[in-house]
Image (cartoon, rainbow, N blue to C red; front, side, top):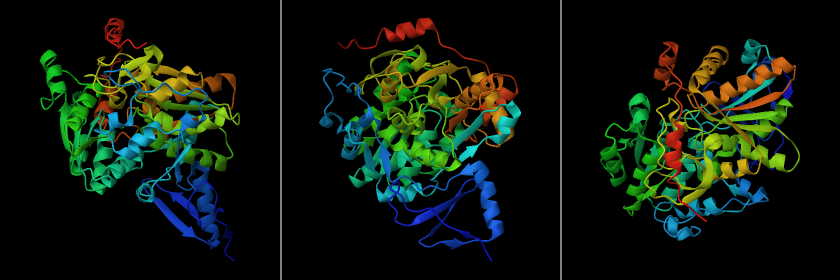
Length: 500
């Protein structure tokens, strides 16, 4: 007689009244839905058990995003108007954002319902797998148990569509026709291009010049989905022309690219701006990562002792960690939560906590964040998505409250870890999550020395299939560590607005 497998019972975590079981393969999710127990063969049961020994995806997609602000006893400082220095009002943002995004940016509600249309698109790649890195553990000879939440199976190859899809949805719902944005490595730009194509929107992207030339296939990916892509700084905007006058060979920065995109949105009534990180609503959308992961870790019978993620603007790190911080604030768990940033752009570990502009030209609201100064241009490291002068205000605030910690790691150590990860776990990481991998390896080797059997949870936010030129440089021994100049940072910080 065939064995009987009872599917999980419905729970408040989902909207669906029917239970689901997810089997996750390399790049796709096969979903089987049934209101009744399903009969499967003994062989299928054994296959599923083997799969679950390394992967855990038998959870539903969350039906709500989580807003950490609701659970913070000390609320974060408000953004300020760039001219009056008064707290920003919703109408001040209406020329660049749709109304629903403005509401989400300022909301104090704990949970926000995810629209059904967005959930349907999420199903193309969510839930994403939680994988135990057994082969990496074996290589390191560590007693630690290493898990990674892998976001590389999305159409764009990273976590970024988690926010691109709802942003495109809300803009389309309000009748917007054109979206503009910036991108560093190209993960966000390709994600917004993908989302825009689904909702019939025009998309225009300013890509940091260094990455534009380093990563041509990211540009082609955006163009395949219908986006126009410009290297930044460009001569298409006043902000870009000012930079080029000073430095015609400028490698660009995310701050400059943001200035260009915001300028275009502000001068065109039929155009809105989308941001891929930093702001509250972006971090909110990314919490589907952590909400899924909590359920998946429970399925493994595990509780993380250490949670590690890379940080540039902060969306990937917040997406995994914020739901866990909620549980930590409730006293249910007490993991170490560690952000990892590049040594060449260390906003959390070397920046100041102050009000600063989110862009180079000073067009955005002033945000209280850890910053290296809004006109700081990091060296052209290969982690293009982490070359941002500031850290998300919410992450900066949580860091100031002592709930998390931060370290910085140079890029050669990161790529060394990436090679170890690729040769054991089979996934070639994007340069950004190599920082999380390097920090995870450090922690695992400490456990080897102490004999501690810690559970380490790592954010693996995307694959590196379009970043192989970076690996080529590393494998040929040509990749060097780039650092910041203390003098450059002092000069940049001297231009941070003085807000009393």
